[in-house]
Length: 420
Ligand SMILES: Nc1nc2c(c(=O)[nH]1)N[C@H]1C(S)=C(S)[C@@H](COP(=O)(O)O)O[C@H]1N2
Ligand SMILES: [Mo]
Image (spheres, rainbow, N blue to C red):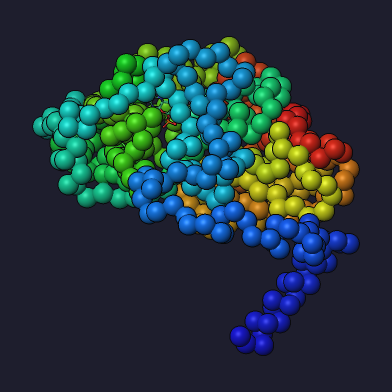
């Protein structure tokens, strides 16, 4: 190691020590002397372990059993039309484990036999075609990491702080590596009339026959017809064997169990577009076809429902994303938005993808309100509730990207609160 590098390490260590005034970072660790957990053998170190492939498909540790998708206590559940929220408070980095991806089904999820699955491309094309899964998987594929967020995410918070944890405020959000064929390849293959057609319709093969209009601009840009998720086939809940991936656009357009793409010259105004995911504006008129998920962020740790273990050092961590591009900056406030400090963005920072941010914090034990505010590559800054309501009024359900506030009480308990 060169002298220069050693010097760097030494100075960063000193900087860290200086930051954690009084007790250093290590102060949270127990003193080793006398701790039986390190001094005495544990049961698992004194016997044979399980054989390989004891579980042919790996499972999380039984000690992690509490980390689950959950249904919100604040929502009316019907048996099939429902939503499960991803436990954002337990995630690291940017990838959502496949088994914890949120779910939103308008008519329940289905187990599709891939041998019987077909994708039709028709409408304004030279030749309509029907593809089998084998046909599709022979085509040139790409893999891309993108977030998917339901347009209704954070929807229960329009009025006031309604639900207790980040799982319920922001958990209709996930981020995976998707593998599939660019939709453009299929449109070219069928000779789509891209001069005159401005839209495509995507149709699902479940009981809801989900149908959504997507702009030709997006269709020719980064939309994928995907079968892979996190290195394996899609999970049934997420559209096995085929779903549309529409980067940056609200989840409803990511049609699952995708069976048909129709090329056309006007929006279809389908049942799924007439009432769902439209925004009631202050003038009483519904804004239809809102589709891009605007720049947003949330602190996931510490977050509502958690409790700090006493004053001292904490790594404050969260997620930021924008449907319009990359995250440029995330600022964190420890005093309800009066002062802001710029957080570290962890790599990779990708287009229309979750970005993980972290920032050092020493809690002095007094009550505080934590907030994060993201800025994207277009310069768009995530709004406060007051700014959002100035434009959108108060009667919306969807597309809430306001700054989230978490109150840390003197007890260390963290609560969902809403700041103007
Ligand atoms: N065919 C079909 N596609 C669908 C839906 C559906 O009910 N049926 N739900 C949509 C909605 S509203 C969202 S937010 C996303 C959710 O995707 P996920 O369940 O994989 O999280 O899928 C979309 N695609
Ligand atoms: Mo959704």
